[in-house]
Amino acid sequence: MESVILATPTLWILYLIALVLCAGGLINRAWYILDFVSLALAVGASAYALLLGASLGEVAAALMLFLAIGLMTFVPFGIKKKPDNNARHKESMDGTGDKKK
Image (cartoon, rainbow, N blue to C red):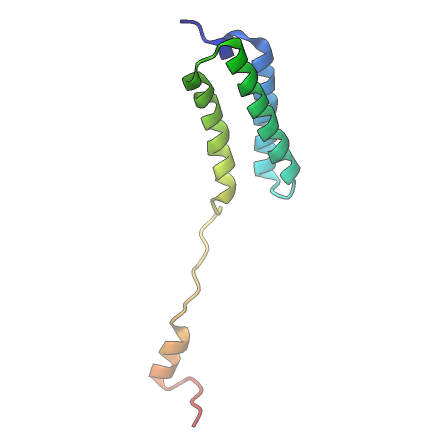
């Protein structure tokens, strides 16, 4: 069985443009318009692929890449130190904190 997405150059170009825009939105988080344009291109290319006769598995496999890249924007880069919420409690136990009478 031949893949519709792999056999159609128009779909390749649409998915490639959407992938570049999605990666651009990941690199520069301030440009949220890139994410929306990328989403619109990916959904449009998927609808076109379905109209050409692509299976749902084929389209889902193509969209999973965009989902994975899109979710990477919510992953914090680098290790951030968590604030010590017990610092105030530790100071009061040590006797170094402010004690109001």
